[in-house]
Length: 281
Image (tube, rainbow, N blue to C red; front, top):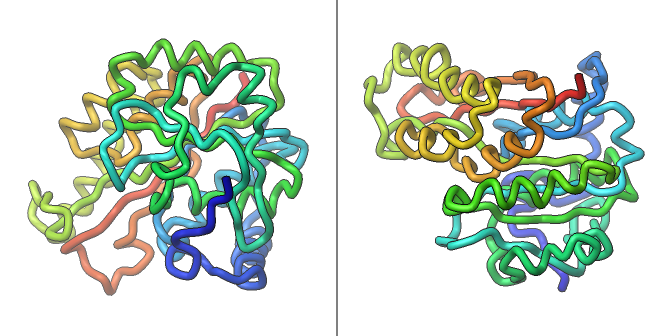
């Protein structure tokens, strides 16, 4: 199976030179402290809005170029899924070259027994795809295990947590892909109006409530909380990575909003983004 890009040229550049220029500019303009990190939560909007937040979080990973495999928990925007969907063989195309699926790791842990394996159900979804050019640039040889994680995982969350906790000796990094609050007329969510006070409320009260749930490692509450408070579009993956890595130190590394990135766009509609790391103590 071979997955062609769906959002290259819209969410991120379609050509290798532009991808490299974006990445190298962020690297050049930021002196980022390296940490021994086992997993990250990254935003997945267009790079114009959240690409720097995602990349700066990835750049904190010590020796990222030596990692064998990235296990990526994607959000689900395109269809209802009753259980997680694994892309179990083949490769994903990026502007910088293909990233192969780690079929050996999948076979070693019999992951195809626990997940719905489907090529079709990954079509049209951007939440994993937008991360791949960053990962390819930072580690040309690494493989991936792409899994779409719906909120329905909540019913068997500990089962899936235990599957991945058994991989603790593997040379892997876990990635969960989510944006945070989707606020405004465009999203049908305006509990505090649409002026600067609404933006301030989301940044200072609403998002910190969800982020603190992650930092306090209350992984079993994340999905229900998110559904009740409109907190994140990838809450299933956030709950899963938090459960797997709950023995790590959890850090908010980056935070921004589309309204801050483009002030002239106003506050009628905006989305918020965070980069969160799970650091070895």
